[in-house]
Length: 340
Length: 142
Image 1 (cartoon, rainbow over the protein chains, first blue to last red):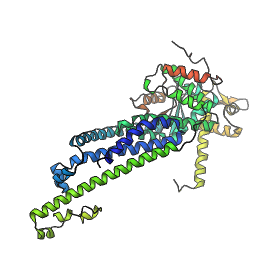
Image 2: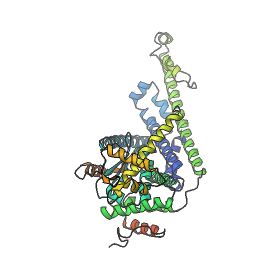
Image 3: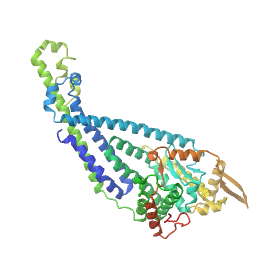
Image 4: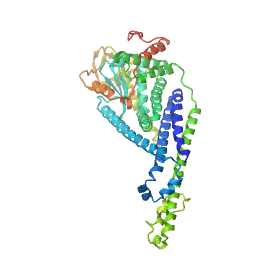
């Protein structure tokens, strides 16, 4: 507990630093689910560790202790967590959960709006063309999802580039990339340290669609030119970038497409998987230690009761409420038995 | 998912392929400067699609009310039905501009470019058999 509860934090920081640059160089199709998995596990590990740290403090509140029938003094004597650490953890956990709630509501709202717009688009074809000169193209998730492209975008691309664009957006829809996007959004709302993972994740999704389009069209250069030409045409209309922070993504995609496809490598995925396993194991270890601590605190309360009141008949009469109902051998792992 | 029969999956892929062909034909017509005959459309699509396949897709799109056509020679020339008056384009633009996290669920083909990105892109693409048209925007625009 003393150490293991902090290991998920370490794993989170390590992954937040290492995963983005590594994921950008891996083939995007395995990299995206790997990143999503890493984001989900570390977010859960982060919340779990914070909850365990916070719990040691919360459990010492007299009302809580009374409800859980454990001894506050016994708990305090065993508690390996500083009160300050526990208090900060409680606060951080509360803020993170609120942030997650807000993000979930917003993301749900975005998804619903996209679905509604998708259902209301005219026509019953996969492609919906906007009669508009401004070049735009995007995939709109729904059942079924639609590809929305403006006339301006179609007219600035050549025949094969047009095909690449459609294949790219189709890959987004077929791969259900909006689910991945939701995972990045929600995990980075819960844990701000995962923001670089979310940024890398968005990039990996674009690369995934680019690679699938290249496979489909059979020519990486065509896709590179489609991406470049579409980006330049959009820049010509919408003026200078509003989001300087996202800069560099399109050139990186074009560069990756002009280079040979990335080689498959399993070592980074294995290493990541190992880190996540360590994260889970240490969290489980911390949880079981915290559970054992509570058990022994309950045991301490029981023995104290038994010592002071020493009323065996009373215990026999009232098995549900008396200490006997709660008291159990602290070494016994089964929780269910205690309530029998 | 695992319980899905192979036949069903095959049928689904067939249906998807038809939908994809419709998109390709529709996109080719919207990109063109004027009405196209089935032969013209076929010339703009990759692979050797059967002429009758293109014809079938064109007439299906026409039936759906997405294309207009007029006689040209023995066949028809098709063009997309314009809808400049519709609010669809405006609604899609407002969807794109909806808040700071507008990219939350929409997968856009290209993100914004900084000026530096633009120069870099021109460099990258011009190094590659330069099929990028220079008439769109000059690279060193001030």
